[in-house]
Length: 187
Image (cartoon, rainbow, N blue to C red; front, side, top):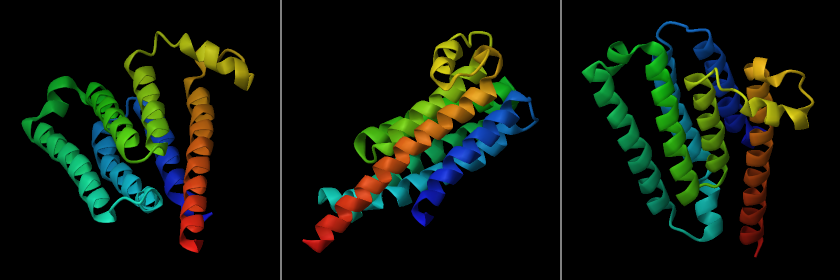
């Protein structure tokens, strides 16, 4: 259960920040900015076993993760110093930050950690709902399997449902990796 705690933080934090962003909370981009290093750290920690299970060097894995997330945080710092938040507004800055983080999570997922693909897709979906709340017709199709009545008008409920599904897939991938590591150690 302790191994799943970082994933719980990842998805619960995203849902909470999504809810705050929908309410137009002031300085919400700052909170998302604080959350990005948390996402990077969770990506680093939860995929540590993947490198061992694949037989890759953990040192190179660590270097790759630090380069990817470090470069991304560096770019965000530069944009912050340039005053992008105040130039485009808090809500738009938050959506931009969400979409950029989703892209980085997808890339990390493709190259280093498969479960981050699901988180990146989930985060991108959250960004899409925040960027264009009027076009939430996709929620109708997604609400059918969950038996949600009028899902187009309940984006937070749908985000929570999708967070649970993405969490379960990521947890399965994490536990299967742990099984691979245990099998490799025993042989």
